[in-house]
Image 1 (cartoon, rainbow, N blue to C red):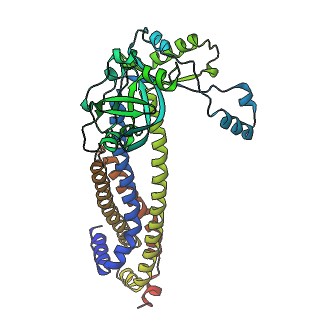
Image 2: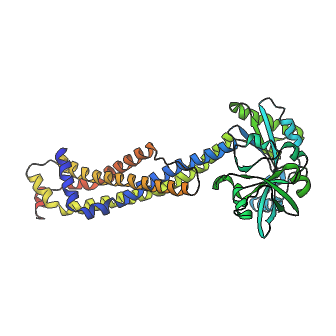
Image 3: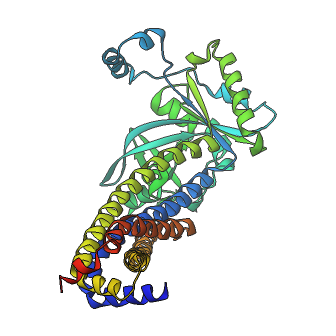
Length: 418
């Protein structure tokens, strides 16, 4: 085996250009696998941190348009028409009083409601079209995001419908530039609001929170929207281990409050953080599998390339093979020599692919951190194991056929190629 290894090294170094070109398909495929899995770990850590900023002990209640029997019975085209027709339907049954009842549940520590709108926001000549959140003051006891400057509004300001706002970081920059926005008046729609706080940067995955503003819930309901309902409720639980049981208790409470007897007709959904993470993992897992499948195509193409090159090498060295067999080399010796050569090419490609993939993963990490994302650089050990295993398997799988062809050559016929 050592002799086969030595002969293989000699053959590969004799034509370095061909060796490099042969390994390119493997290098690209392995690098793609490493990059996808490393970037996946970084993205997953980013999502974990974003969810943690909301609080791992929270769950969400959101309104939804319940499906109807007629809608379920329609064909696909009719269902699409119905969806378009009802896309603007607003559920108005979710009230703050619902949250008051939910707060009475044993494992619930606090809750707040949210309503959402869009308005033109201006300061002097600076004008922005922004989304605003009307939120209960309890938000600041639950939410883990912090202020860069200023303060949160109080419960008294909430119940008194005070005209105060907290700006997202980007919105504050767009409206006030280098000026200190605290204490200044900004116009939201037709009303003037005093800026009392500015949020820290929340990042690209915060749903655009850096470009939003926050005001007391009662202010948004009574003075801007003219409504008495909410669209989202955020509930904080005492024991995270009981989150799913608490979610089911909330569903039962909401059905009682909304006089719903058929769960299929719920006009709300309740989602725990674990369920949100599970949905993310399902979606991200599918995307990762697709990208790895694409990389696998590159690996197969690289394997076919190696097989073709090995056939060329066998043809070039036919006379050499005949001479070795005439001098007593066994079929197994010839087989192992060419098989080791094929494996060495693919393992070399795997090593170079790991290095390239790790380098690209670090580049992604650098760009992400420079963009303000809390990205983590990590090359999972299992990705390296996969890379080495796949490259070795390709070397054996695609190298065995030309190696067998070489070992079966008749020594007399082979020596005629001299």
